Length: 68
Image (tube, rainbow, N blue to C red):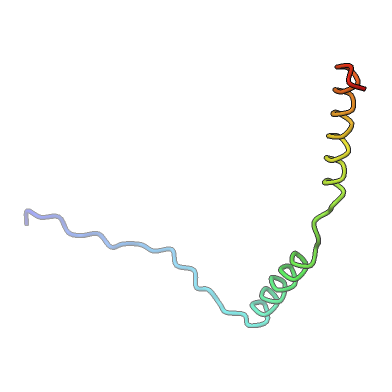
């Protein structure tokens, strides 16, 4: 025989088991996380801080340039 024999392929198969209770817990956890993320409101304090800093910078600029 001039041809090589094919070698058997080895697989490392680990069977997975379906756990309906664990699946339901994971779904519930995802649903609760989504609800919590949807209910949180963005904080408006950052907007007020930016407006205050802008007004302060404008005041300092006008004061130093001699308009006030």
